[in-house]
Image 1: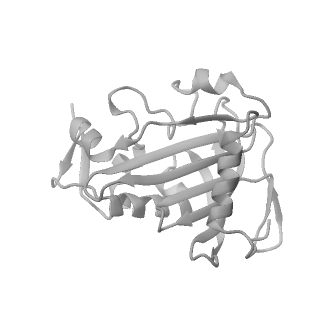
Image 2: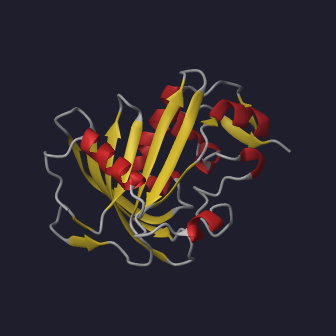
Length: 221
């Protein structure tokens, strides 16, 4: 897929929302996560400090471009290319990665058309069947699972940020297997957020420098 100038962040948002509303899709959304509340309850932070909305957003944008560094438990290979500033001032780029399936142990190539809005502090990852690299080589997404779109966003106030996450899978018909397995170890760790620390993204703990080096996180005993 070539990155063109016709797409905007709003058109990406419409594509996500249309897929979300389609009866043929399988969708779910995690409850908003109060990052500081969860970290205070479950972890010790040294030195003590409050994570701000700006820090969480900075981490999200870095993770979007370089998932292998920030979420190596989700992807085993990854690269991004073609970063472009669109006419609405937002950013678009292509991303290819190898990921484990949502409800299968198989691993395959996932291709995503990524749209980043600093103004809305929202990122859309739109699944694509194929993309063209900067070398003109065509990449094809693996067929072991349906295409899917993901929305990452930051909400709340500057001092009390919320982590927002939702996914819509283009399953052709609502597939209950994804709902049944969403809270099991069969799902990637990025989604497996149950129990006392529900909603904590592991990279907040494992890669604290992604949050502008806020300090060292230690899990409370």
